[in-house]
Image 1 (tube, rainbow over the protein chains, first blue to last red):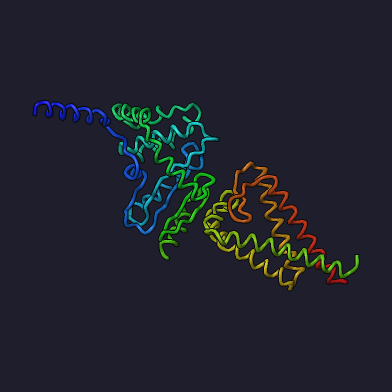
Image 2: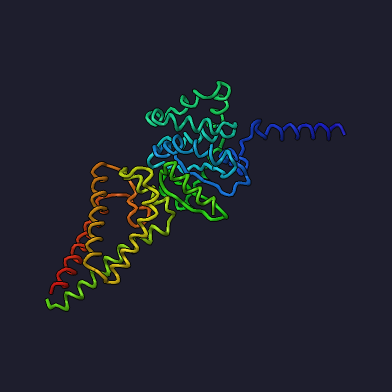
Length: 207
Length: 142
């Protein structure tokens, strides 16, 4: 009996050790940090961006804040960020996406994404995304985010699935918006000024 | 060349010109109007409040002009109007290219980055429009 107990305890200890203390969130749960708004919203706006693309920065800074306030916060539209990395043109974009997605696992996706886009002009020169992100997170949070960026082998899973969906949507540039309503996906390529986006979304909501 | 040869040539040119306008209009109408508004915005020529009305009406105008040219009614005037419109588009394209704007042409729907070939193609379209206009006036007089 005692031998069995010792064996069981040892087995449990081994099992406990094999599970990382902070297992990376992957799959459906990991997608949640890129999705905002009410699940009952009649429409979803999916936004494909590349963190190093200047037009994506303009969309993120000039358009999405107003859009979020008027449509996402009011439950009219869900907003889903999707990574579509143009790595042949942008050598730091994957690292930027890793920082954003690591922040997503810590519940800081919006804050860090905004910071990465805002400081795009700086880190796109030298690749120092860490320094840009460090300006909006605490030292403890930075330690954790660096650990995730460095060690989480599943961190790029959402990027892979986003890009697969992007290829299905025939995305060929960033930003690209996909409006999803009643299962129908309507794609709009390129930067859209807010008044135009607003007018277009209002028409779709009214239908 | 005999007179009836000119008529056949004019008919071919007319069909070609009508096809261009129909293809351009229908391609835009198959996409959300906001897509064409994105292209118009990229040219940095129109005030923002003009983007929506133009994005919504121009494709229909192109289709209407295509149908009018196809019908052959008042061909001289519709071919002239078509040529003037192509001249306007070509001017916008050349200006944008000279300014170094990286813009989706939007000419036949989305997905065509403005480049030298776009300008060559539109110049060829203008030659066709001018030839049809000239031919229509010439045949009318003879």
